[in-house]
Length: 233
Image (cartoon, rainbow, N blue to C red; front, side, top):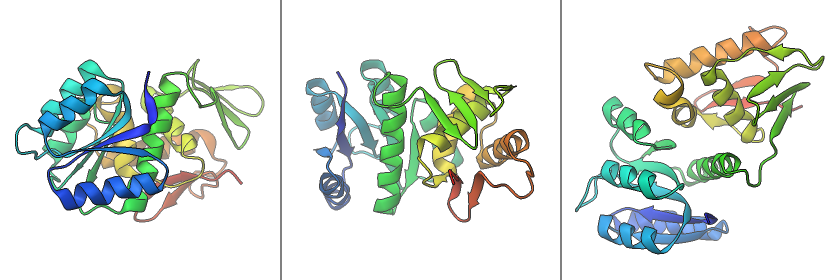
């Protein structure tokens, strides 16, 4: 059984590891610490964390390899927290099952928002803790049937990528969701040639399908310098 209050922080830099773990503990999470791949494997063998914060450049094993091992053994969410910022690393991380990708130095409040978002999605996927129907502006998004209907009950056709993006925005409860987080949501499982431009394209499509005036959106708002949010008011 997954322990959604438990997060493993894997980072060989003690200062970074303690900074993140201590912050999560102050926010009510149980934070376990690992300085390398061996320590992480031992923790994973004896616990069922809801989430792993995983550095890529570890001294004994590549974090991408650990992500692949994690996917074979666990349903834990994975957020990569790393100094690596190349498109190759980002795409590889998402293809290997990462849920999100954060580059250092880390803003702790933003990281916390991403932690909460990934944990909510994981709980939803496992049928725990999240309502199967999310609502905004009269629309109803059914997470089980994977359908969207408007206020009159008429279906709105969505692609897989559009559905995943809208679900992530609604799941955030009105909080801004970064482009990197949305990129992790869709990844190569939903659309091909994934990039931040892909996220913006899907947002434009969603606005055309849900907004009265897509050029002046009321519901799917741009948060400049961050990403997007759903306005529930």
